[in-house]
Length: 110
Image (cartoon, rainbow, N blue to C red; front, side, top):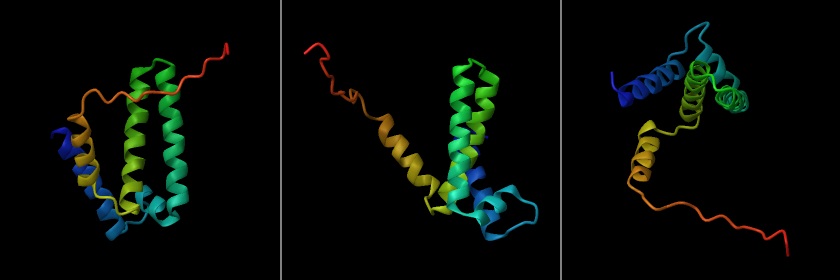
């Protein structure tokens, strides 16, 4: 399976759990609890990803990135955001070059 197929399969699994709830499913639990619980988990997984990366533990970082992607996918399904929209945005961004944002600097010596 390629990357897009893996993401599509994950997205479809979450949609399937939303449309056909299964007893004991963690995905169903999150969807049932609603956006606040889902966003709490997204935040937790984001923080855990940052910590793992900061610690330089690549295997733990990969594990946490996978958790983050899963929870972001649950959020997308709950918010009715199609995977195709996100992939299209990523594709559009991949075509951009020279788009480094200029940051405002403050001269602290003035």
